[in-house]
Length: 119
Image 1 (spheres, one colour):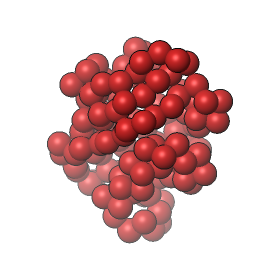
Image 2: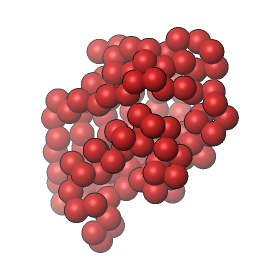
Image 3: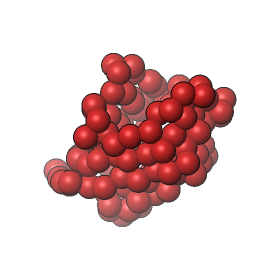
């Protein structure tokens, strides 16, 4: 992945398809996911939502509203829109979203995804 935009495209596809192996490759070991209701998930917990079948995504889209790359750190602000169920409950909606990545050599890794309240 040479660019942050390529990383974002791969991440969107992986989330949309519940691609655990793809996400495992894209998320940094110390990844942190911050949810709109205040929950915080590490990388294992983020992936376990799909492994367990607790999170079922029917549609997942992420539209950038701003991207900024500063040397080895990149920040993408956007809107995450999804049709989803979590533990059988509807978890669909549009959420303000920020994706933060760092570059180690030629490789970008996502270190944080933060979801805010409905956009």
